[in-house]
Image 1 (cartoon, rainbow, N blue to C red):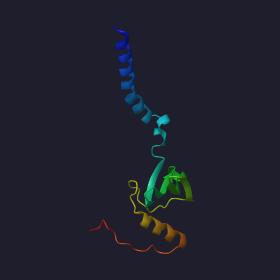
Image 2: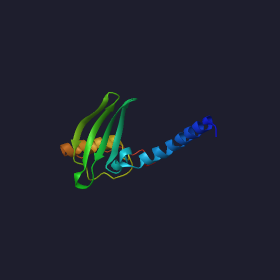
Image 3: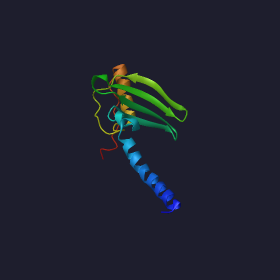
Image 4: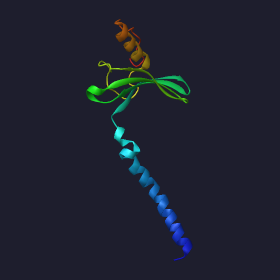
Length: 123
């Protein structure tokens, strides 16, 4: 066996291990798998190409909290924190349009009935 062949074989082994290590990291707590199911995006409103407002649910069970976050290239800021609304369906991320979510939050705060908006999906 030539010294060049051994080096080439070692290099190929290292390259072959990279996808395996990445796959393992994705499924361990070190790689972020521990946070699965603890946090979900309730609604998102894009403000511009690189700014958005997110309503995020954090925690589970009785310890749930909603955070209203402002996200921009400069960082993430907590705009508001509140108890979760019970009347929203738990669908996929962005399930409820942000305008409807905001109207519900405002009506819950003031005690008024939320304004009715046409549903574009009901055609």
